[in-house]
Length: 183
Image 1 (cartoon, rainbow, N blue to C red):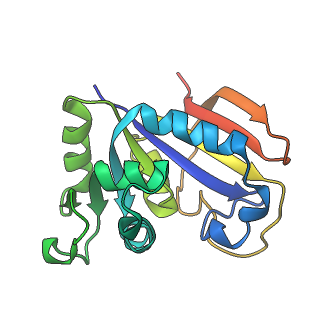
Image 2 (cartoon, one colour; image 1 turned 120 degrees about the horizontal axis):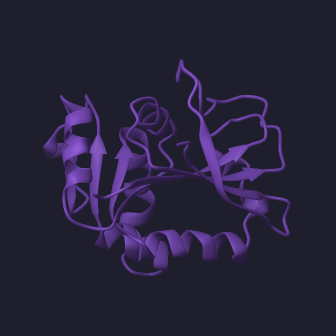
């Protein structure tokens, strides 16, 4: 069975929305290496609508110009949305998940392949966590209080015990933490 693993940038106060506004000052080769390692273990991408639209605009035109662009452009993408339709998905190798989202994602997990990676998409990550569909949550926690913006766990609405499986402190002060479901 495939796993679903999310990777997010988050501030100390839990903000995961639009990390591009504040994460650049903390970017490092250490962070790039960790991301490259996680991508190598993946063969599919799961995203929410907003992340899909932002990533398509940013990464699609880059072709294979860097490792992240090559991965995103060459890997099958699944987009969860109730407002997009197949005709609006212009990034090659993209499929829409709508309707019975939990059922569709469960079928993806039951299929063959490597890990399904969720880059960004904090609303989707929170939903996957609440629905018991997320297997791994990797956070790069920035040494910054963002003060405003959507927080990762807003709306989860229940207690979800997690187990810390890996952690490290980067030279820039970022804490890398990987969690799985407890038990």
